[in-house]
Image 1 (cartoon, helix red, strand yellow):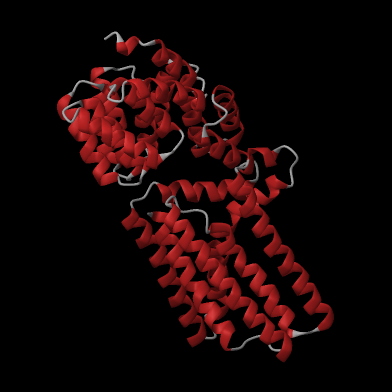
Image 2: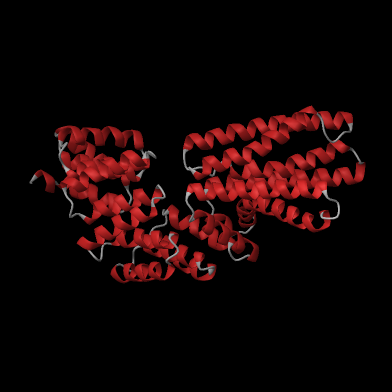
Length: 418
């Protein structure tokens, strides 16, 4: 027990609480140099590494802990957090269930169990896990917060708000609770109230990504059209993966049916064309409203600071593609070269992959979509080059580009939904 109260551990814990992770790690490693198998020091080191998302280092430390204490609930708890951060939800669930089997009355373990299930879109199971944790501690902040998030996803908004109110009552200075309230107001289509809670959250924890993302959505939500997009985004996000695919494929099948009917029956075409145009506008807006909203924030002297580095980069790419498109269409109107029209279409269509290639959560999926986008751009540039030389709108490469562009939307949806 004396080692557990070692001054180096006390200093490290205090430094970690203030997010001075480098100094905290230095204190711990100095102690571990003297006592390599000090389990409590290893626990703190693992927490510090997980907070910094240094997963390779955290994995080494967690495995060392598991080797030293394989029958310890905290060991499996840390292992579950590591596996969750590594995007291995099934293994993470097994690990946290092992921790719960060793210590079933700890609400922290049930809270993490609920979070992992929630991130894996197992909403009903996540609610059960959160409520099990609350049965041991009715005021447990993490369980209250994840319960409110799950209830929103299940459409039980009144219960969700009551849960957040209880969490705020227990801990009014909890950054995550304020961020949850911000997202709740966004779901209720009130970005003004949402902004107040996101500001409060970021004042308490300026590094909280959950609150930063909410802040950017709330800022964009001041515009009517973006609020309608948010309604759709919240609705589709609350559906299971299966239902999301049914909805998207169903819309596409309906679009193809309407096009075929309009081509086959000229008398019906005037009535069907508005529906066809509406689908096309919906399809493009669902991809473009997010990055275009970020572009507007980029142009705002205050809004740009709410964006992450990735969002600013994406907004720059989309803005550049839009500028190329507008300039090319203007050039075509003046000069009449069909190749400039092709360039205009290329710039406009490339806004979709450029605006969405960083959306997937998994790094390997982001890399895949980035490479796909680069390949698509190169094919498109080749097609435009031929069109400029031939003064023609289409050629063999342009058809390859079109097929690649259509396929991208399905591939990207699959990667993002994962």
